[in-house]
Image (cartoon, rainbow, N blue to C red; front, top):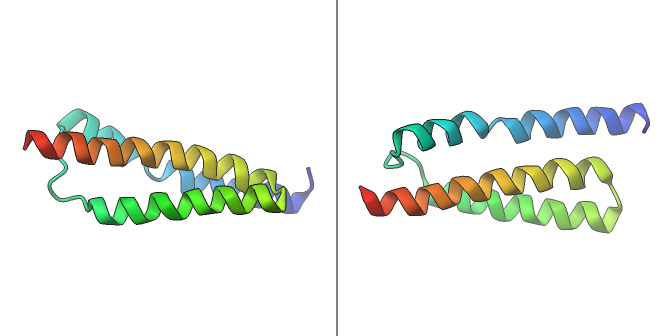
Length: 87
């Protein structure tokens, strides 16, 4: 892995972990009223396209970081749908 891949991997990790505090907060509070499902839905779709792009380009940092990000954002979308019903 060269330094360019490391920079890409580091950037991807930063973006990927950014959603974790929000997931934890929603999981603990079960409150999603102030969070936009549309925003997270579009973001999740965009991340899925990044995964496809990474696969087509055979770009491992893009594939790995966006796959993890996709998983985390799908959790958030699930929480938004599930907890919205309870409010």
